[in-house]
Length: 252
Image 1 (cartoon, one colour):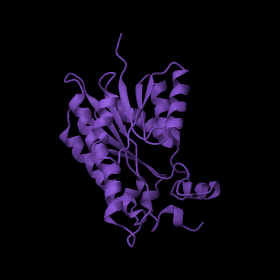
Image 2: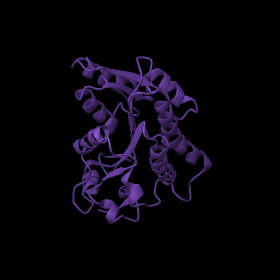
Image 3: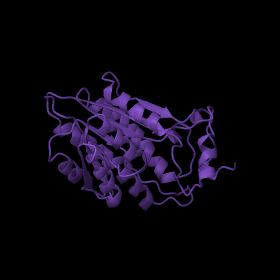
């Protein structure tokens, strides 16, 4: 009997991360669900999936702490090595050019760059020599139609984009490393439902990214053995006609 493959998904207790976990469990993966403070949501999701016969375990870690990545990987591999990693956890706090500070830059860089870099390194180190692994990095379509809102966040995601490419070079052929860059998917930043629906359609196709499309892209990247160093942008073409500001600040 073939051993069940195991994957770690960070920031996976709610929103997009939780939907990825559900799909992975359905596909037969042993999922390690990482969360920070959302214990109740993580426990509920794990119980829901366990009741359906899926193998899901929850591990808590605060990725803003310097040693969190190593501790998380140690906990995630207690029940056996990992074959894959999805770097989905992200810090998303607002600042702008006039309010940016060293503190905010460092906070965003620690969670959005250092943690995925160290987790990828750790995945490479623990994967059995006769196996190959896969990493999926969750970027942001904003990088391809850039604006200066969310200044520190954007800087950290730009660095994360560079990490996607250089880690694909550095860890080949044992790791394939690709990214998904969604645009507007779910309400955020205090958006009302009406504001979200308008922003979701503010693109060339009149249709923003949908959860099933992100799930389908995840499945493609996990299975496409010849793909590495790529970024799949899912934003309805918004990056081809980028706004001057984040959609949260645009008039209807």
